[in-house]
Picture 1 (tube, rainbow, N blue to C red):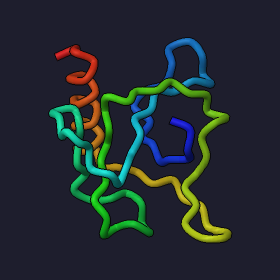
Picture 2 (cartoon, rainbow, N blue to C red; picture 1 turned 60 degrees about the vertical axis):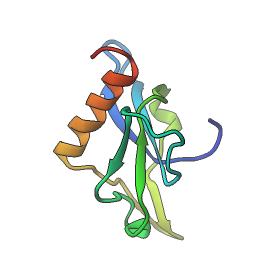
Picture 3 (tube, helix red, strand yellow; picture 1 turned 90 degrees about the vertical axis):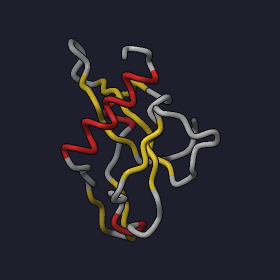
Picture 4 (cartoon, one colour; picture 1 turned 135 degrees about the vertical axis):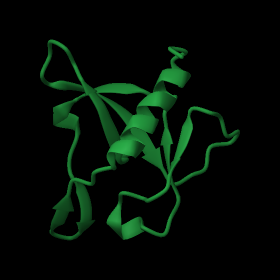
Length: 102
């Protein structure tokens, strides 16, 4: 994956404070749809609230915090979207399924 995309941070590295594990978000429905794909009931991106958003939990990445940035809403406005606790837990569950931990 090479393009800029929103992600959900699901874990911090145990020893390296600069690394986090992320799950990418996408507005493209997975094909085929699997049990490790999660359709968020509410899109966390405010400028795309009416567009279905998917957490693609089979695409797990560990990245440096220096590669992450806030979400740009418009020319000078940046935010850090947050998913609710229930969605966060379901994303972690789908990630466990994708990694065959469940």
